[in-house]
Image (cartoon, rainbow, N blue to C red; front, side, top):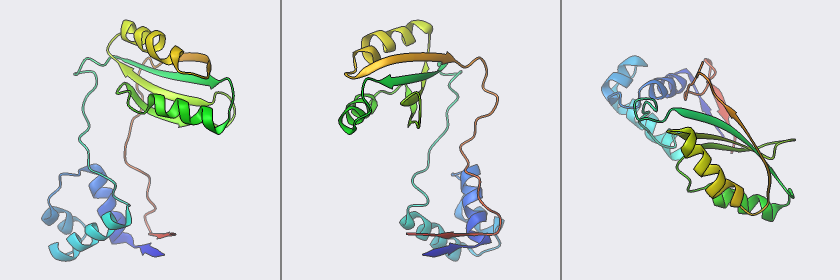
Length: 162
């Protein structure tokens, strides 16, 4: 077990806000000198708390205008069917998120495509052909009201379990 203190939480919050922050600026923001700050970041990476650093792109500027939530129900909810479905969608670039759900539907996907025609191709040429898929329902997002990637962290620290 390891306890994350306020300084660790501050480092994580700063990195969630801007992963490109320099170590010197990061250290200054949490009142540390650069070497201890670097060591804390390294330790949190080794713990797996910091999985990766990414660049967030603007989907609209890239022509990805259609944001769709797709509810997928399977014929059977057995382990083999779940693996078949998850393996089938694993490499699809338009599938931004996929969740195994409790209740109905079995899966919820968030798919991002440029046009309705692209969505049609995804549904007809791919999703309807995945073995075991029984039902597909789609809901279109009209407007993104809130989107964030930063996790809510407790201000006073956190104890990590193994």
